[in-house]
Image (cartoon, rainbow, N blue to C red; front, side):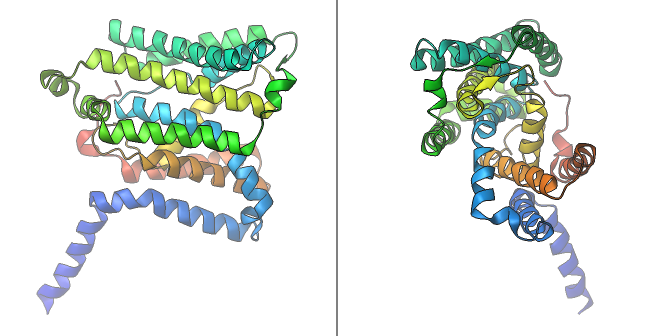
Length: 321
């Protein structure tokens, strides 16, 4: 009997420390947060009106998070999403007076160009991604501020008329499906995970690591440019604060979704969806409860630290590339 009693706790400890349980933690966390927020807001967060508002806040962050997901799978990080979204939104707004397709292409190319700059300096000069992207974050945030100094940059009435839920859902779902297919069923997903797991080993196994990293940064920037289009049709005009703190929101969302900050083979595509939904529900719940912004940041910071502590792979811990 004593041996059986000893075996049960050991099995429980083994399960709690297993990758299976850690993979379930984000989903459990999402369910818990929804239940807790629904109780604390007296059921208001799950009303039809509030759910529509929650969805409207999910579209463009989820598109951006998809690109950053691939960057973080490499074991890298990107702090330029906010400034990229702001600058691409300005380009889209200005071009929308000439042609909507031209505006969309212009936004995507703007994001891709910023991603190419990040990728070039990261790969060519072998500098850590967080150093490069912090520098370019301030650079392009300054450009956004300069271009919106006198007044907000308005978009055309034609592009604002595209603020349709079915259109935003279609764009978001299309991005997720394409990214999921590439991640799960093509060489791209294998290469990205291989670089994150170990760049030297990946290089010796035939992966062209520099090209993979450069293209991932370009793709992440392009997706942020596409997300800027969804942002423009929602807000209608762009100010200097466009995309402010978006990079923090995306980082927290992905980590809450269970994405290991070290990247590698243990990432799951579901990290994008679960994390973005969790952050949105948490953020809206705290607002509905009347907390001041400082208190909201404190609560989100505590939850963020808890998830990092629970999900980080200490065996693979290393400096971010």
